[in-house]
Image (cartoon, rainbow, N blue to C red; front, top):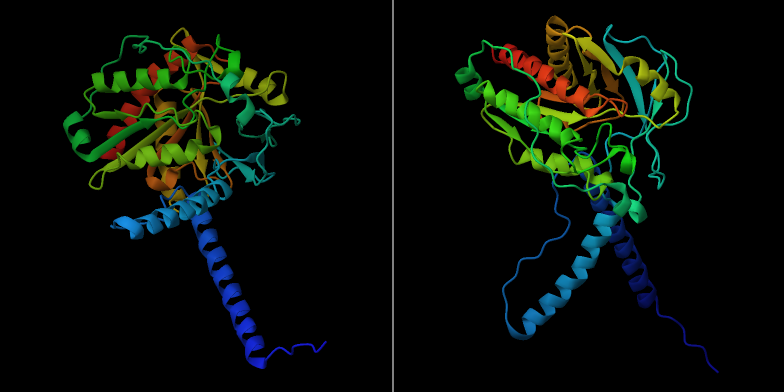
Length: 376
């Protein structure tokens, strides 16, 4: 049998098609990579969108093509989905930048199905290891305790604050929100210290602070979104989106993200927290606080100034209530959205809700004075 010889023109055709396919593949990969990088910083992006008008057969083809493209969208979203800013963090051996600053690393790690809060590593004054909590998809139904509750009111009598509320309201856009709204306090220990019950979680703490500041005459936007439920890994992406909806183009955007610190039971970090979790102020026990900053933000120096102003104000009014200003390497915490962004950890898993509520009252006064300083 005589073998058919391939023409040179056919060979050239296949070579050209191969090159075109490689170019398209490379271009597609570059495009998807850019999308994934944009998602990491919380940017709103569109993968593929179709807009068309048509009827009859043409519309059927469009619907078919639209359906095919939707599969690509799902692939892009699942492959390059958002993750929390903070991963494993551990202290550097370097000296703090300032006396009140601690600098800790945020090293990259693969997402885990383990529901752990802190690594079991030895704690010393210069070294500590911490990880964020990741929600296991097959256990999310048991991870939260969902309870309807009433809004908590102020737990003590407010002090008189002499501030220019009219000027502040004109110049300041004050936003309180919660990236991890389900974080809770004692006596709620179920579901890994997480609940929707506002009698025990940080959302309830935000309610108190908001109520107090409004009583002082300040205009406050309290975002009551549970950004960490049902998907904990999208917490920061969710809060990023929600905060962007209320940012002002003409005012200073003061963003306060209220959290709660925590540690695994019996861990070395829990032992450390047990020694610093509370302080006596005016005869009552208050939960201590920590300010946290992500060092990947381009406006890092401005964020540090904001944190320092708040820390100094707290020390003037209630010395010892704020423990540290922590700078986490490799983290954003959405703080690039404003030069006046703060992440405040109010208490720990070792604090009861009454201690956290009292701190909310004290923190309201501190924030009021801090905002007055920023406005001047």
